[in-house]
Image (tube, rainbow, N blue to C red; front, side, top):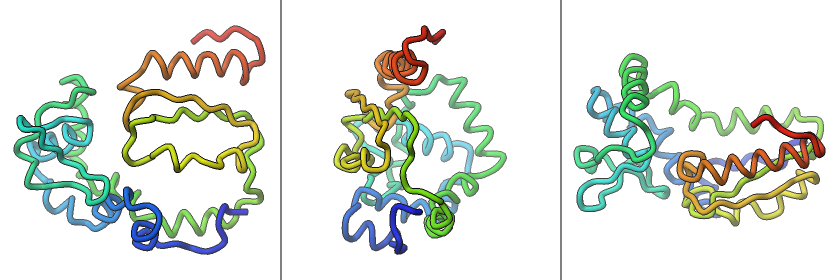
Length: 192
């Protein structure tokens, strides 16, 4: 059984309870693919999405609004990706465009319809959830009540933003290792 029995449009969710998901409306709109098309624009877009800023603190992404295209030319390199990693992503998106990735934001109702076929709403296996405390989209309040659906939930917290695996890799990997050793595998040693 799905967690909810009635569909809530993204627009309604943003207007009522999830204003920080406003960016999803913009990413689903088709506007982003029309504005970000050249190799350099794709590089700046990816830099901005992965934490790059302009010289005066300009950002490319606002959770409530989406991409801020006028800031695109000012965005500096991402602090999270190496030049080689960035070059790889730029080449792939230049060859294939952003549309296939942004399509995910257009599937809310399809995902809801698929969830209706779930046989149960309780995930009764061990689960580790690591909350990024400084994530301005997936905020800690969204994780309240998870135990209702995940009775074998283990929680961890890390002082990081949305990209916690890059921003705090040692802390996140330690939590995963300890969870695997003590919960997933009992008290067996992990080779992580």
